[in-house]
Length: 135
View (cartoon, one colour):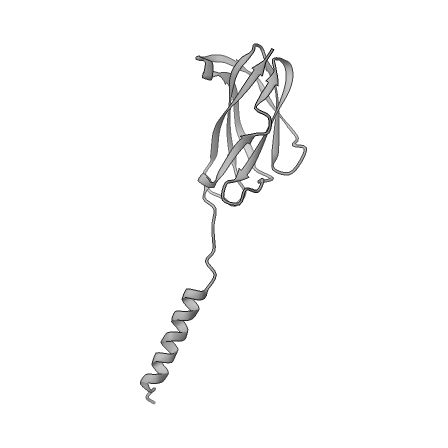
């Protein structure tokens, strides 16, 4: 059985329309995520809490349930990377926020280095944030 050229052209046009009109799926890459400080300053001293928010830069929305597997706090911004303090993870107060308790032994700029895995993404979110400890 032969099909007419008009029927073939109509079928090709319908296929073309369905392909170009199909919704495009937007997937976020690991580079689309970043940590941001909620408050860039803390008071120098023991047991201070630093809160960060993990956001999707494309949507601007906070990202809950990330697994933070690396954290370090040192004075690298002031040229004293050997000045390291212990960082303890704490529960966040709202979805997409992550809290850390640390002792800021002196005033100055401290670098909080974080590494995290985001659910459903391959790769690691890595950020270095500068927290200023004030007297």
